[in-house]
Amino acid sequence: MHAWHIFACFASAYFMSYALRAVNAVIAPDLMREFALSNAQLGSLSSAYFFAFALLQLPLGICLDRFGSRRTNALLLVVAALGCALFALAQNVAMLWVGRALIGAGVCGALMSALKGYRFWYPIGRQQQLAAWMLVAGTFGALASTMPVQAALPAIGWRGVFLVATGLLLACSVALWTLVPRDEERSLAPPVAGASIWAGYGEVFSDRYFWRVGMPAIVGQAGFIAMQTLWSGPWFIRVLGMTAEESARSLFVFNLVMMFAYLGLGWAAPRIERRGWTMVQVLAVGGSLVMLVQAAIAFAAGQWAWLLWLLMAVVATCYMLIQTHVGLSFPAALTGRAYSAFNLLVFGSVFLCQWLFGVVVDAFRAAGDAPDAAFRHTMLAWVVLQMLPLAVLLVWRVPRRPQEPVHAGS
Image 1 (tube, rainbow, N blue to C red):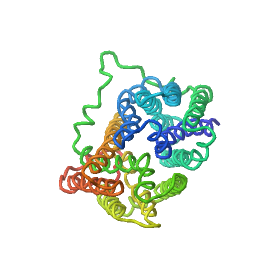
Image 2: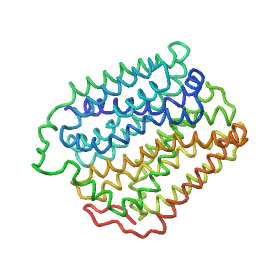
Image 3: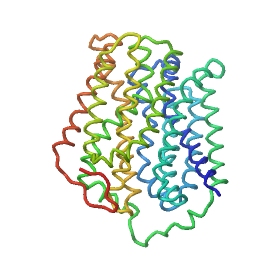
Image 4: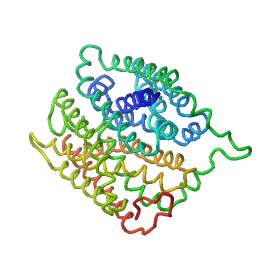
């Protein structure tokens, strides 16, 4: 009888997590103007979210096992609310960075806690469906950070947006604490005396198949998230010549298309598996298509060039299949730590991607490139970088070790 309340509480938290992840793509012009930020500084500021998010992934897995999903997520959201308040009141770049980092730390468990809790409260047959619905909830958050935020800026400014977010995060925390039942916590096994709290991570990180399928997803997915949550907005404005309002509308459509792509992925994934496609084949084809679209984006100009970003939103969903695949490549007792380890690598890479993209753009500008050319050359450099892990995936013949149940492998 608690089924809908449980999902709504966790989905609301993930909605906020994704909205705050993506909002800088819309408010970037205001931040750059008010604080005189360079592209590198903007990238570093936005990526502080992902730096803190990645830093807490391994402790997060342990906290979820020790304290449960309700308590862990509710308390972390208070940290995110503190970060939003600090960001809203910031008077310098250092305060902005710390606030952004606290936001990333506070929402680092929004999805992981939900997936762990769903394993307890819902039957196994509904797990894939619930995961797809969570992605839809997150994409709604990304949608809310586009046109609605752009419409609110003249009235309350970017600082007001973050003060509103502070209140919403606290409301999510209270809802989780009071509405989610506590029976999961009573089922948690007590820690084994003398056992290391880090036990299991060594086995995950030493697994060669983890790295074989993980690296293309880590590099490709990290690059896509870096584009979606920050650099897409500046690209629309500086490369394609859109106004801030046109950019916000384009970002809204981009995230709307991605939401439907996630829904389509939930429908297509089991059918792809039944047709005999392995995850290596899916990654090879999907990753190649992503690079082709990104190369086309780097060269495209004109009124309809932004439509290529919609195509990228569709083909990049192939990376979202990898996390579940990696988790199921390990024994059940290590699944949570495998998820956390993968998240650590992905979001650590997003931190580097968002920052380095701005650094490389500034480097091309210093070498004499026009603003649009600097962005285009940086995108091409990123395409070249993605070729290496894709080559490793195809050449490094490391098999997936048998597990129960066995799903598509190499």
